[in-house]
Picture 1 (cartoon, rainbow, N blue to C red):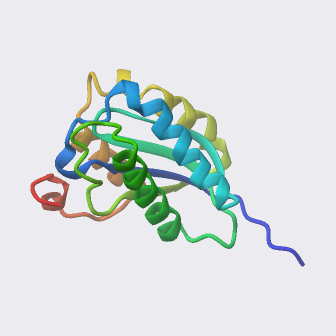
Picture 2: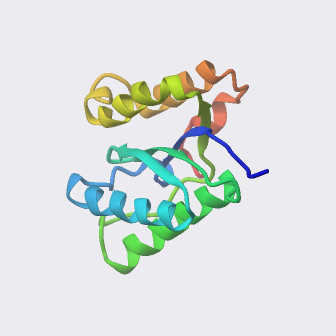
Length: 152
């Protein structure tokens, strides 16, 4: 029998110390580059977007690809690409860690719209409050202290 999977991952990660360096003018090419990394791993990108200090990705992974490996490759590849192409001036790196939440197929369209609307969403909600809400919604136990961007 073949392997069949359909798991949607909503992945979120931020710049180190939440540095607001992902300016609008560099985001489109940044997101295209991330899409290429995801495609190279035979995985599917449904939506990517973000703001000046963090990125959201909705993807499904090929069964041979682990979530941790994909996130490591995306973050590492983007860091190298940003620095070697001198994009996003002042980019320090990505904050350690990430959030990843699984969702059902019935959530896909809602998540795509949510990720599309990041700029508008963050006129009302801070990234820390957003991450906290995502963790609570997913039932993930967490320590408030690591959410504070002080040195990661």
